[in-house]
Length: 204
Figure (tube, rainbow, N blue to C red):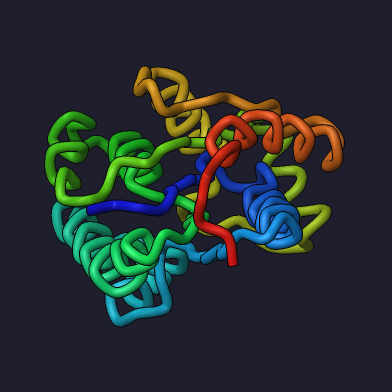
């Protein structure tokens, strides 16, 4: 039985998920909570194959690509998420199954079928969906990170992904303006998380 909390950070590339997840983890640890920071794709065997797609997405069919994400998530749930939740910890994951639905859905697969393929994964208590114009996210990737865009980060593709994220109506989702100042975004995130941790008994 789940005793902990699961909070997923979602959004298109370049919205600051990694920065915000680290800031929230530090904040919660300072409050005395046991926090697990994790991410998808993982560093496991399936996650490593997924990262190869960043360089050449044509290596696999869409169905094979989806299967890699699902298998990576199964391992992630079995080895990291479920044990941490059973121990009463707060799990912060940088991406979860909503990203798979948005990105693989934008590539042409049926979003509802992707949700169904992930029905084994624990439902998040909160999804923090960082929202940003795709042009701004691309600018951040290229100028602030100094990185070249991979096959998942092309602006036309990101527009489709952003539209799918916008269409999601799951009750766990809270949308946050990722284009705002880092500290302002973190303040809004903490305000959304606070009701979950108020009275949460599991502290270190």
